[in-house]
Structure formats: C-alpha cells, structure tokens
Length: 199
Image (tube, rainbow, N blue to C red; front, side, top):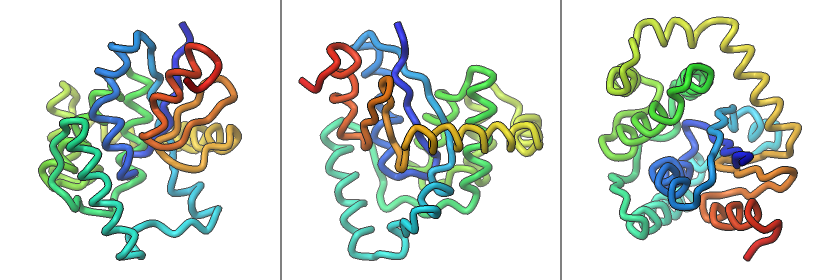
C-alpha cells in the first residue's frame, strides 16, 4: 500500500497536533505515512508569508486554538511554547538524517514533546541531545552528520520537492496529486487515500 506523504517542518506549531497522534491514527487506519521533513520557512518567505510571531493577536488565537485541539485529542500542551525556533534548520536537518536512517518519526515526536510540554525549544540544547539520546542515537555524531554538506543538500532537495508539489504550509498530507493542508485535514487525506474522494 502506498503511504500518505506527511510533509512537516519541526518549527510548525500546528504540526504538534499531528506529530503527537499520527502513529496511533496510522495504526487505526491501517495506512502507512511517510514522514517528509522540509523547510516550510523557506517557502513561506518566498510567499512573503510573515509568521505568527510578529502578529500578537493572531498568535494569541493560534495558541488558544492549539490548546483547544490538543485537549480534544487528549494531548498535553503547556502553551505558549517558545516560538519561533532559533535552530529551525538544524532541527529539520536532523529529521532529514533521521528519515534516511529510519528514526525520523521517533526523533520528531521526542523533540516536539519536549518543546510543547516542557518548554525546551526544538533544535537547541538541551532538547536536541536529550531527544536523540532518548531514541538511542549518539547526539554528538548525529549533530555532526546533520551539519554536513550532504545533509544540507538533501534538506534543500526535500524543500524543492515540496515546492514543486505545491506544498506551502505544514502540516500537509499528499495523496497522489492531492494536497490536504492542516492538521484538521488529516481525516480528509485518509478518506481520499481510501476512496478517491472526501467522505
């Protein structure tokens, strides 16, 4: 069975809601998901899309909205979380390396949990080393590899692939040529994967 592509950036606030429940949703639906890290920040800048951090009214709504939705899903959240991330690109290059080596999902779940539940920004210390150690990775080796030109090239290639598909935000679910943007479109993506239409 072909997977649903889950395009995400560590640094996307609404992606927290998907990250923390996707494993269970995938098991229940019987559908695999391919976790695809990319730089949503690069694409947003190209579109002159200014993030929530500079819009206090919109940011206040965002945090309250995430809080409500997290409660709906039974997900813990201590909000507002530190935002935006200072080490956005490093956090995502680690995810790119993790996808290559098979531990992307575990890392992303661990780093989001520390970010949104403990207030430790993803991509920075101590979150980065603690999350990597939790999943059995050597933090020093991973950070060195994630900082290499090879992984930077792979990160840029992933971002270009997302751009070519028409992805403009995170989280986005891609089913064939169909895109579903936002955590609240996850059920629609699953329905499309099954039937070719939104139920």
